[in-house]
Length: 129
Image (cartoon, rainbow, N blue to C red; front, side, top):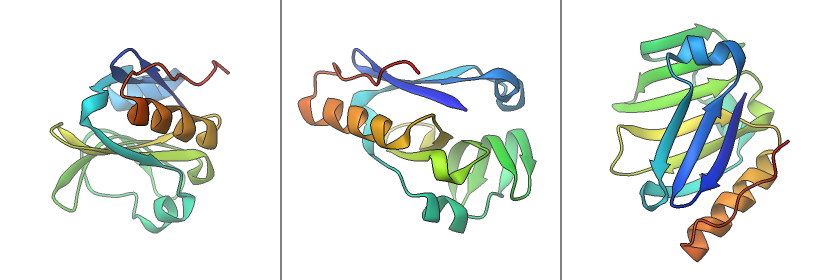
């Protein structure tokens, strides 16, 4: 699972436990100005084949995908065990085209990030939980 927060002008994604090892990284920091949008769409995550050319990470078909995957011509970062608890973050001007990560409360994360994007202030952060 990941923790997604807005910290000043950055979207910060921090990974938990073994996911840090499988992904070969503990966190990502993306300028908010490079975030095109965020959504909670478990059906899209389920419909997306959790495959691709894996650069770094681990994948067990239909059980988990953690790490960097080359999918449909783009690099996508995955940290998913449960599609129902995922958010999809669309990016531009970054190595990754999108981040697909599992969080504790997807609706809360989407609202906090969307609020920060609308305000441009980077002041909205979901409570730790």
